[in-house]
Image (cartoon, rainbow, N blue to C red; front, top):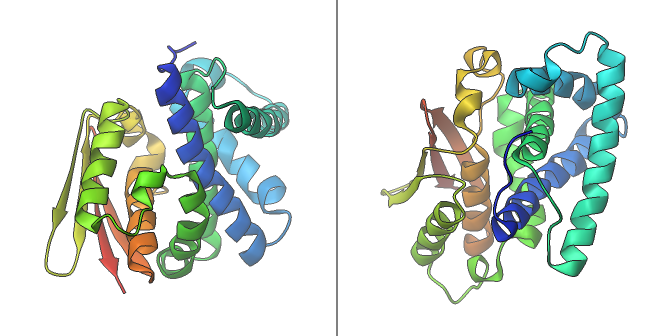
Length: 240
């Protein structure tokens, strides 16, 4: 069992990642169908948890048993998140559980890439996610009176202060915004078969930043790409 995050940090991590998962599922049902989780995501999720948590899941021979376990995990996790949102305090949440949530997120992403293609994610999925994700972001990142540069710099500080990453920086170019994250708590994925096979394309930190830009600008944005490094990522965002 891996260590726990600090109480406030774990609550923030759960809310942000659960926001991405909720957004993916909503769009998945819309574009692929009501069986997207059961028929498409859960089978892929078994692959990702074996990749991300080999010390726990790699020896599980029965995929059906693991699928049942992951389905139960997601159901219970949603209930715990709702309870945490009502109380404002997270219960005991381990990094292992957050890794499982990451596996679900990347399960959705690979489904969309395989069934719909990259362009569907860039041109539709990430745009739809911006609205859903806004409900999970701190209010200070949604205030229309605060300049976009200040919001994104606050976001970079937010993920750094919560120790999700060791360092984060936002850079503004003529027509794009760059979000760099280094020493990410979850960068072990970058040394996985999933990464080497390019089944994972978009960094969640870049996805959240893209949602902040879209909410601020009031128009569609594109997360153009995420370049994964050994310990982090660099994501490029463009407003349409």
